[in-house]
Image (cartoon, rainbow, N blue to C red; front, side, top):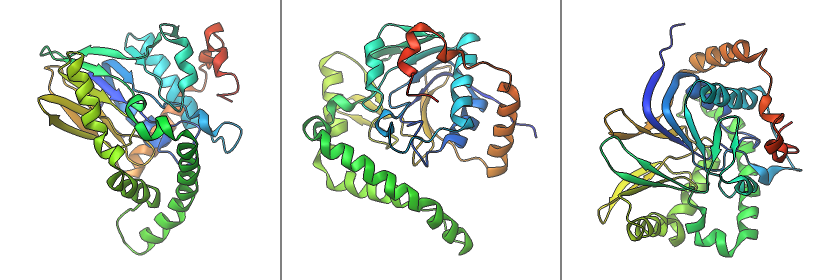
Length: 284
């Protein structure tokens, strides 16, 4: 199978939630195998530490996702990791570097055409989470339950010839539409970006890929890899776009198999560096 690699100046990805059951880990691995960039921003919630001690789900795809990142870093890709609220213990390692992956609390990205973009996860602007953390954890648990129903529902819909539909996605979208906090999120983030003198902001957190101009400030949300498969990309000339990744299942499976062969003799050196003792209990 001939699968080409797409090259970008910058890629922004977030909300992988590695370790959470039901995520799009196969699709994410396939995406990383076929997309390269000079700089990659991991905009938070890469590893889901909220599920530790409960239903930790880690497979070979998750291993190979990390191996892919390390290989990219070794080959010269500038990878910046900005932890979110689900992997916030990594914020203790801000300004450290793990196998060439820099950990930052936030970043400022300069596009090829001169725009200054503020790169943050965004949880600090989620007022609901800030004031009701217990309810957020409860909601996260509820979402996991809904995701368990996705597979049988998807099977039934395929048998009936219906389009794919996710119960978890529908529930999350309904919550976002009904919550003033979610509706105000983009406005709150761009207001702060304006106050700090930026031309725009790239964030994640709310699992909704989006681009809009709010009072002259660009708002980019790179989406997620739990329900959807999206990223924000910058071309070599500074043009930005939202990527929606949806290859054929046979392509995904071929890329997964290729990755398994590609990394079978590669040590998970990420686990062996002193700064990564933080991973103990996080990665298998």
